[in-house]
Image 1 (cartoon, rainbow, N blue to C red):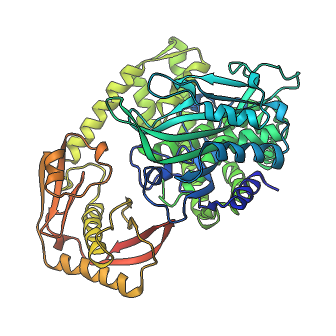
Image 2: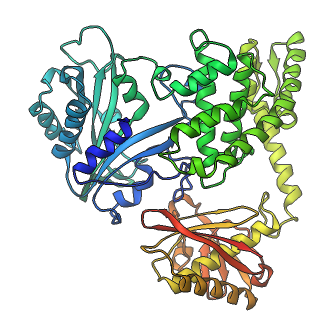
Image 3: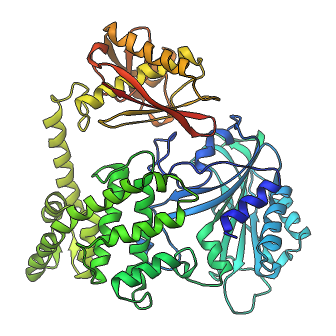
Amino acid sequence: MNLKDQFIEYFVSKGHKQIPSAPIVPENDPSVLFNTAGMQPLIPYLMGQPHPYGKRLCDYQKCVRLTDLESIGDKTHHTFFEMLGNWSLGDYFKKESIGYSFEFLTSILKIPVNKLAVTVYEGDDKIPRDEVSASTWASLGIPKERIAYLGKEDNFWIPGNKGPCGSDTEIFYWRSDEEVPEKFQPEDDRWVEIWNNVFMEFYQDAEGNVTELKQKNVDTGMGLERVVAVLENVNDNYLTSIWKNLREKLETISHKTYEGNEEAMRILMDHVRTSVFIASDPAGIKPSNTDQGYILRRLIRRAIRYARKLEMDIHSNFLEELALVVIEEYQDYYHELKENKEVVLEVLKQEQIKFSRTLEKGLKVFEKVAQNSNYIDGETAFHLYDTYGFPIELTKEEATLRNMQVDEEGFKIHFQNHQEKSRTASAGKFKGGLSGNSEIETKYHTATHLLNAALKKVIGPSVHQLGSNITEERLRFDFPCDHKLTDEEKQKVEDLVNEWIKEAIPVTKEIMSKEEALKSGAECMFIDKYPNEVTVYKIGDISKELCGGPHVNNTKEIGHFKIKKEESSSAGVRRIKGIIE
């Protein structure tokens, strides 16, 4: 049985409810580009908001992390990975959590106890040493020589400098054919962390004061790829069954073996898999030069570059062939891969066409400069970016291959000057004042505010924006709601929005302090993410929200609004997709 299935089956048998994997692009947190951990989408519930599935939860979560991008190509790092997690929201705590982890590892996965070791929190002047976890591990058969006490840097979790926090206990596996040492030395890299149980029992404020939480939570995370490598007894994650089909397909179409080409093949496989998941996400990410689109573009282009290194024909349909293997492998667990298959293939195809056209030309620039110098100046680096679509990271990689240096600071100056010119050129084009927003997108921004207000009237005052996404084709709006909207409710919402549009209500904006804005009753998501001075948009007496804009001057400019689809986004969250006709 697949490890994901084993994990879910076990925790469901312990009274947990399986929750669906959240999208890769966060819907409720604009502070990050991607979901980087299984707990990230659950933060509101860890803070005390009741979860519609109850107090015991489990899932497998799609994650993307880019902090280790430079390490991709080694045996253990991935940009996309799956995190297995179980949670207690004010229900069980340390003893039960540790007991579940131990039983799953030793009874279900059959990992020998003598290959396990753990770390626990050693305590400080504010939070005591975690003797409960240590004694629980000892009672389960972990010898005291295999229980290490570590400090805040290793065994304590807090999101930033304030918030719910607490100690954690990490579980390690002896990943070596050598004899297991009697004493656990955490710095010995043959001990590999496989599971982390975080116990949130305190709250730390910005001044560092610590108080006990009323709701004590458990948050655990287990990296699927790493654990599968442990179970299959290999020290290279890319040699596990997870990668088998993709690896064999790559060997076939490249006419090369994995052995001897490990780095290039790992990077190519990793980047294709991550690109498939980003491109299939409901957020509709397309390659671009900003935010998630920039990451997608960079990953696809980096994959193409390493295909070239493997002497593959970069004009062939190799990306499509590899993507189809990924889709086939994961579509039973993540249905968006099947639903958005054609979208994914088209995204890869178009980006491949764009980049392969200019790659050879851009590389000739390197050759020309390399003949006379070992230095790429800022102007040349920006020319490679602006004309040939080379991200600065790709320029640095190519320069390293040729023992050349890159003037990164000079590149940044040219890049910033380019951005400033773009902003100036577009300042008068769109009335909202933000470059990159077309006239239709400006209308959608204002329509989103009206939709929010209409939902409050029809569904109730608890409705608020949990996430939104606007393109030139439609708006998408997520909001908390415990039921599927009836046809009557949808019609009422649509009619209200169109009634307000017909009333030709002026849209005004005012700049004020964040404190003043909140006192005035302005609605806002993620208030901590806003600067001290904010912009408040007001639509008559109907809507008042903090927003970066842009917006129309009068609601009559919007046109006719129509709800195209209303569906579930995740547990307790509904999603509306609407268009302007």
